[in-house]
Length: 598
Image 1 (cartoon, rainbow, N blue to C red):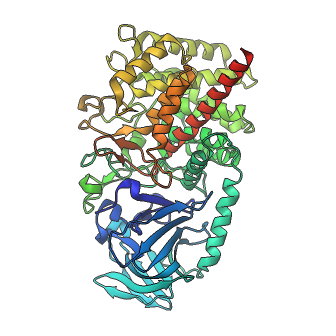
Image 2: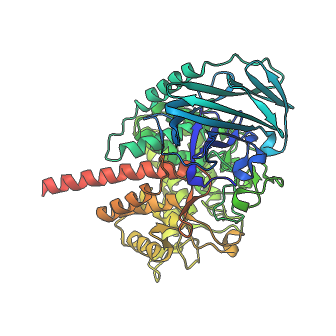
């Protein structure tokens, strides 16, 4: 069985990523890209579906005494204390050259520790056992287009289609293992010097994190989240994937298991905001260029999500040979949401471009053309029902959040025209006013005192918390105060916010999921904007406490089992952390200024 989600740490090279469990097992690795087939898929099955375990031989489930990233990096260090000594395991993926490398270094701290290694390579999500051959200082495993080479000075042996080793590490010794993926039709790449790669990788991340301009109260947490966003960025194109995994369930044993290894316009727009807060203008610029390439074409054909290089066809299918994480089935590859109509993405993209221009990203004529084309499309499309921010698989509806985000798209275009861009100012200003008036009339229930999930509904949705954050209404407006109150009454569970009350007639799936962490960050933002800073800080600290031991968050939290749920690590959750830390810092500064003025 795979480890608990919170027991994993992430390593990566900004092309792909691996998940390393506390017990020393790499249970997930997709190569050569985030969305490629996994060669280690034990996360969604068993060790027979591929993994690489390296740990002390004494005690199969020995827990580490300490685990952490080196400061400012994605280099993971795990220390184990054995009966006769202490050992450190250093895991990392060097910045990409021509091949994919995963490096593991076993370092003796004191005494001597017997170690064991077990390597099971299974290509195509655990379905293909490769042909393994011995080579000088290691093995080579090939199946079809893929080859993986393991290089080490340790003697290896084969056992029942696994590669194993037993060895002793003593104080002061460093024993490296390097796993290299490359296309099988090409010549094997040169072997890396593992210790030199460690130094280079450490320096690369230190240089990147050293450019962080955020200096607020929660700098360590914000920097770790920024590093996570960088790790989820596909360097060749600038696209930011939503998570490193597929099919980690939103409910144990449930069917809400989705593939998040793609680039959502919505998530990436929020991520760009967070990167700009951290001072990472280059990443924001690269994402904008990715966006322009991805959505090029007719605005009516704009998708909610794309592949890492802007691919459009992300056909969803099930993988029957994988039993799923703790039995949560089906395991899905691809995501059918790419074909959905989600009105809100135009607003997120337009809002992001507006924010980028206001914080220093140079203007782009191509970006304005795209933004204006989206607004022209919305002139006729905004009145259509859609599947909404939560990508429901039930009947399309007039979701209130979607309409507000249509207003955002038009409102930001109006602002751009007033600031010098070319466009029909009067017509778009009238359209923004019309959308706003409809939302206030159809999307707000005066009897309930809150915005509702969709026109005609009698219940709330956590996405309404965004209305104040995008400038639709001030957080102190009575309608927003009422919305926050009803959300707290109806959607607050164990102090955290559910997205909405799931029901099959709304989203076409059996009810039940964890608590979506980003929604709770939005609640903290609203509390801060309403002047309830103490409550906001308390809620934010509660969220920080849900991070695992190396500072990572998944998509959701299950209050029953008190476990992280959903794909991991989740960019949206870390974006929420960064943005809320920034909002709390601004609110605190405003409060201090007010006190001084008083």
